[in-house]
Image (cartoon, rainbow, N blue to C red; front, side, top):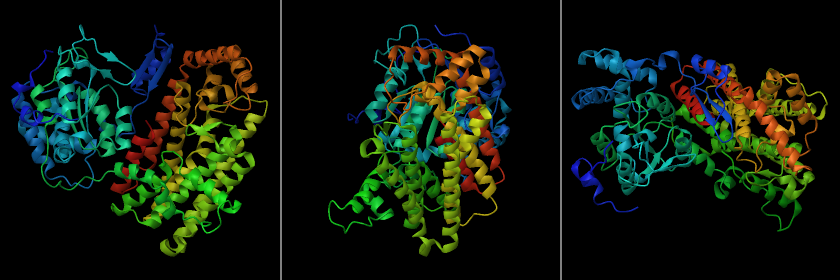
Length: 626
């Protein structure tokens, strides 16, 4: 594409001028079959590492939500046609309620009805869906400050033959050579205050949203990519404007430059209208419930009156300090979000925050005990509690936090009522027992000499170790919102499959070396923990390879952070294990199983007839499962 001159575009120039601030192995048959079947959407290769990674489909969608075929990817050839469809979309979305964003099923039906009186068949249905989504969000997007917006563009807009921009693992870094439109878009976006991202995919976008850096998205991409990427944005309830590429060739593509300029300049002056309900603000706010002052409201110091240095008071002090350490705070979010979904209220009352806090006390206690049992050195990038304070002290702190978690919930009996408190405490105790059963089964397996393991066995362990805490947290919010009873079984099934998918995702991160909670990566492989990847590798490998895997499990050190006695042999074994994993596409198999668990989670709650809860379920799969 030729470079452009912003001064030639009056839509943008007046708004910008005042702003000065601010070689890999071939894909094996199993992978090819998975791609053809739709079980995975993409297989990527790392030529340097010789690895292969599968990307499973996005969160569960009803079949009719997934348009397919060339007619869903066609763009009207002229501006007049595009504008005619956009105006029709604006008229349609004026009638939409603002409490929840439209889902893809709604958009597809509306697009079909919109095109008929305009004289079009289904040729432009994908484009019409994008226009409907844009017009629904236009006003809210325009109310977002420029510095809180993300401007995302694809690599394919670059002038491929002569581009000298550097590409890292996250994005393309434009050097402003002026050979293509990317340079001008990049400079203009940054001058206006946008966060500019030239990248493919959504993980980094989701992290920016969760962090609070982004409250609105302007995305340029082909219709096919927009369908996939904006699935997630729809699920998050984030104001977003999408601009489809005019030519989808993945090489020297084209975009309507005037349209991009116009969208960059969308700005609403005056008071913002009613905001669409989204769980994103709550996801951000829950993290701050565990800052010092808010945490003291949730769980006041009970030994504050004791003199400095008193050992009874010190136990509480260490415990509360551990509560303030990092983490996603996903379990208290579940409780608060379920209550909010049922009540449709923005302000979370203190009694709900306290019960949600009890879920985090429970979780933090389990982490202390888990770190002791695994003899891990690091958690949240710092020393684990048993390393900094000794095993006996850490054990006691874990026990204290469990008791305190139950007490936080019980103390709310006067405000939430004895019946609700009893139901929540019963669910918490059930979760406690299941967690201990799952952890106990893992510890006994690791202690024994028999290391053969079937994939189904690991899924059962995950269902016991990870899912119960999700179930208890979600259930607490449902009870507080007054909707427990008819959906209890469905919600437990949802949490079971969600928890299993989440744990598989963590397994895949370990193979990729992406373990933010711990300093050392790939500890699970050589420590011989009973992971799904381990079981799948045993199931797929030859007898000789199987013996190598089993020997690694039997000879695993006591600690994944322990320095190997023979670093060279350790590195050799790790390389051999990784070779087996990727030879049989174990990550691909695991990704497919995770996707199956995700789908089963959403099917479990299909009959839950509550719009707010359905929006929450979709949001959970979009945020918890990357």
